[in-house]
Length: 157
Image (cartoon, rainbow, N blue to C red; front, side):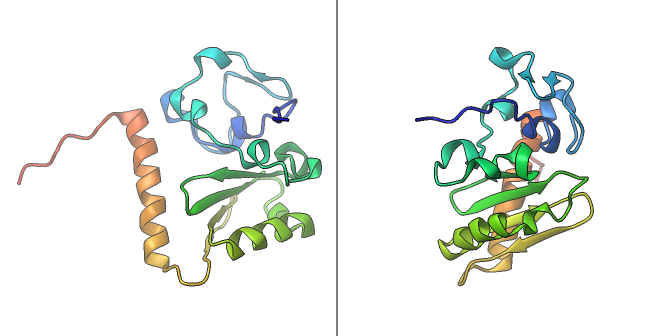
C-alpha cells in the first residue's frame, strides 16, 4: 500500500523552491503547515519532481516520517541521497534509528549529502571518490537553479 504525506509538510520548509524564490529552511507561502500545499495541483516543477524516500520506502518505520524524526531524506540521483535536518534539530540525523537506516544506505553504495543550518558533509560508500560525489551534487544543484533562471546562454568562445 502506498504511503501518503498525511500531516507531514517538512519538505515545504526544508527544500528550496526556485520557481517561487523560496529559500531552504523557510516555510513555503503555499504551504499550510500540518495540512499540505494550497496549490497542490498547480505546484511548481521542483515540488512535483521531489522524491521523499519515506513515502517510497515501506521498510522505513512510521517513526521515521520526516515530521516525526525531524529529518527528510530525498533521492537526488541513483547514487546520492540528500539528508536534511529541521534547523532547530541539527543533530536529528544522529538518532539511533536514523543512523541505522543511513548506515544501510552507505553499505548499499549510496552517497549521503548531509546538511543542516550550520554544517554540510558528504558520507561516501567504499570506492566512491569525493570529487565524483561533489561533481554529481553540483550538477543537481545547477539543474535546480536552471529551473528558476532558465537555461543559461552558451558562452562565446
